[in-house]
Amino acid sequence: MSDTPPNPPQPRRGVMLVLSSPSGAGKSTLTRLLTEDEHRAGRSFHLSVSVTTRSRRPSELDGVHYHFISRARFEAMRDRGELLEWAEVHGNYYGTPREPVEQALERGQDVLFDIDWQGTQQLYATMRSDIVSVFILPPSIAELKARLERRAEDAPDVIARRLANAAVELQHWEEYDYCIVNHDIAEAFASLKGILAAERVRRSRQPGMAEFVNGLLAEIG
Image (cartoon, rainbow, N blue to C red):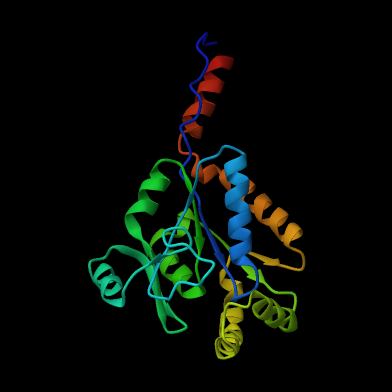
């Protein structure tokens, strides 16, 4: 029997938590709630801030909700391989800078993505083992439309286009690891927290666990 206790397991590798949904289904609200909850708990949570060529809405802050950049700068980043994923959505480009994400995962930080199904597929192609993906569904299309109208940030023609695009986006729900129907934001948030808690202790994300268990066995002798 060893008198030396085993060293604690090495820090785990971070989780890439991907949230997708039709516009208005609630993923941005869930992203905000999860970020605030992690901050209150004192955990280090890295929010992936995408770059976009879309115009900034009145309620949005540059560098917080998105990095708002020109189309020319976006295309230059894409061509240099500086984007982990990118897509054209509703006539605008969206993308995820590569370097901050890779650095965060190595530090054991979880990274949160608020992206569409196209971006998710690109992430799958290169980093599938790091990804936990969640698709947020609305309780009905009527409620989805009502939420978009209550937001009062988009013109009627933009709302109509978002609803039309929802028909395409909803067809990709089966490509995700988990699905949450957002009947109630508090219940949806509780489900999302449960998913993240379970994935953080997945065996494959804890590279030092085998050494730790061997140390426990050595104590037994």
